[in-house]
Length: 129
Image 1: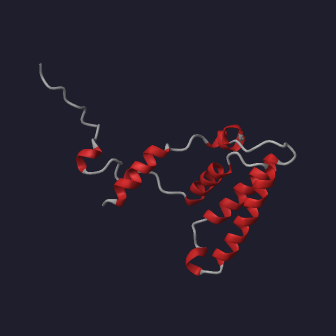
Image 2 (image 1 turned 60 degrees about the vertical axis):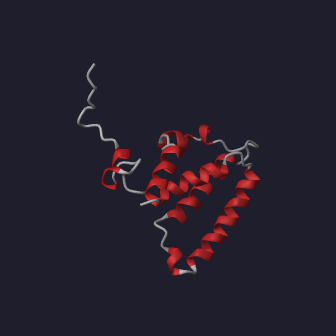
Image 3 (image 1 turned 180 degrees about the vertical axis):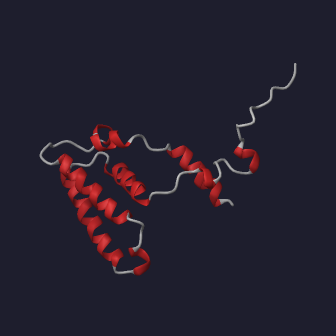
């Protein structure tokens, strides 16, 4: 029996020393989207009161970051974090429930995020370069 050939279009990135596609073929990084995703992940299970406390802390942290020029230019990440936290608080207001991103209409419209295994694998391979 002969050895089966792979189609020409399929590239084995591991063969080239990377588990991820080349940077040119990946979509550009959106710091605001990363921030929103991070806030939703950290807010999972929070009550309205805890979400308000987290917003106060994030506002304080943002004010402190703006005092330093190198921290102030974060690609929109700080504003996106505050806006996402405010949206979560508005969603939880008066409900008495805990936050669940699976039930958040905004998250459902935005679509699923890339899996953490893929992301960590890509980060690990780019760190070793």
